[in-house]
Image (cartoon, rainbow, N blue to C red):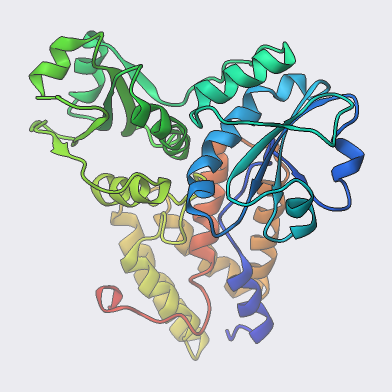
Length: 367
């Protein structure tokens, strides 16, 4: 019943985060001259990984790149780590971060400095004007509410809802938009945790009802009959919103939308899993399986029986854990399954990972 050191190491390496490919092209000393100054327009951000302003710009810049993906044969949205590739930073006179420069076709020595706003609208307008290429409007994951749908969604007893009250002209709202969009994508699979917004200048009745006097104002409407909103006063990074929603919705999302390693696990059955892996004899193993089955039969969690299934499989095949994790990983990384299936398989991996000898039982898991 013992798990090898290699097996444990492999389990530790299992991750739940699956990062979507970025549409921002990364330029280096090796490829810069091969791409810039050729037959395409290129907007280049010179950044430093430690720069706070660069981090704030990053989600907006990603969204900008996404909106021009259909025109990659004409327009490139790119970036250079000028802290790492100091030769490129020096070559183009970069003295601060982020610095954005526009390179026309067949021009590399005299780029145009970008000095307009750093919100998505300003950047998009600039690229459209300079290139003559129209951006493709991205499909939003944020649920856009009206006076009618506000009642149906935000005030539904069946749903938790985070609602941003915004104004189209508000600069802070524009800066928040790409971050809020990322949060909405992270929770797209959580039907009972809605990330929404409402144009408070158009639907003034809703804004007045909830005392909205500035923008953006963000309120959380909890699930249940009492829909008294909670003012959101946390930070405005993607991680800040995720921490808040996980706490108030009982979810287990991480940045990027994947599930955390705690997702789907059942504490009482976790403890049985650990007891199972520490069983000294076959008689002990059978006893643990029998006890776990009693608990699983009483549970309405669809993954409860999976714990028992794993025990039966390990009993027959000692290397089942490693092989099954590898199989699930392969399927997930294939890109051929739906987001809901990815969640399902990630939870199964989380449960599989409990079945190793060195798992520590926390106080609330003790039998």
